[in-house]
Length: 538
Image 1: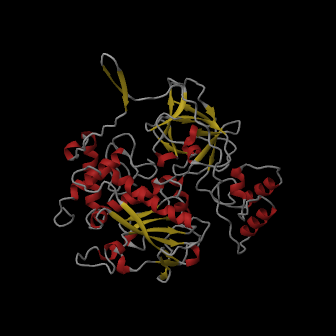
Image 2 (image 1 turned 90 degrees about the vertical axis):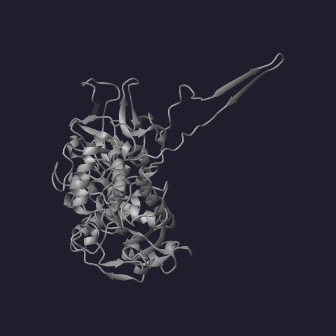
Image 3 (image 1 turned 135 degrees about the vertical axis):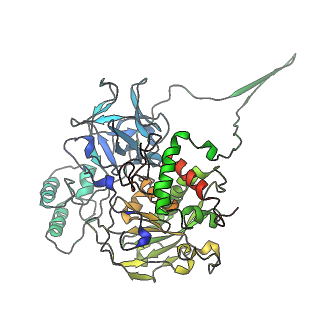
């Protein structure tokens, strides 16, 4: 963001996300049209949706078509283009599992190993088996369930008269789908009727009205898991015999291998060239780990803890349940990276204790059912110039910005080694979790000051879906760079690409999880800076 140097890691609309989404398409189009950051439900000709059976993650879990009355992680999928076609990732388990084809059982499953698919203009989903048809192939229609704009019925990115005509026609129909209801319920009252048509018309005429945010219902129909064909039992049987008695004992044991710390001697040789290139040409050149306030520094200075203040630059309300979920969201995201550091080259922290220690708000009333132990800052509000911000085109970015006291901000005082926080170390906050109304629903900014996304992006992540966007911004806090340029360019990616076959979460649109290479790169970075004089505790 141009107006603040501290927001140097901004990508308000990530470059991979300029592709068009399809909200309620009539026909399928080629996979090149799919937005990497948009979640889709895939509907077959009978009206059922591609779903993970049982509604839970796991290697080899079967995938099939089942009814749905809303969106859920088990029936939401994300596309990523490859040079062979597309990979399709489940929204379950933070995007850990891909759709794959089990050719032996002739069925679809989820796996940590990505399957390659072709999604052609005829709408057929096909695997790569030399073009051989199989029963798992189906004609599907994608329905976007994220990154939607109220009233944009044809999802062309613009709310206009065409959408108004289609909405007027829809309310005359006896029944509409839950997705049509979601993008058409302009006033948010749960009913698609003439009032929605009137409100959308007023909006298009420029009257002072606002449209309700899109609310896709959560699915209440969980597809049952297939019956297991044979039980899985692991036992150890010991038998002792005497002249009169035979005794049989069954013992179940779990043996944990002793922990052995890894070092750079264990670094994969096929990752070395890319890691060296990134370190020398990107990280060192951009000095992204030079300032001693990276998340490495913050975790170590906090003795294995990170404290956040939520900066809510928004007038959207937050329920108590939502606020309680924020802490898990950011903990999962921080520890998604920290898990790679566990047992690596002197890193001392197996788990980071992440806490929300305050809420900086424009209006205290947005915090519903406020609890006595919740700390709120609503009196440190400054003017805010959004000239250089990118808007989502629907909401207005507020011209005010809430803050927490600078006296407890690590960012404000990390350079002063003698500084003492007024109420001790536990009272400080390390970073802001910054949600902005009107900010694009895809993309954001990240650095050692915190992570900035749209308010709705954060709210949509509270169920664990789409968390990779936040993890990308947290990666910047560790000192990782974006890769917006071309191969070998000064702002680009390593010659030959990213090893490991999964690309990188830090290259927007190329991955939806912390990849194997990303994890090893984080380890590499720690090993490079860990012995700097006076920087880290011993």
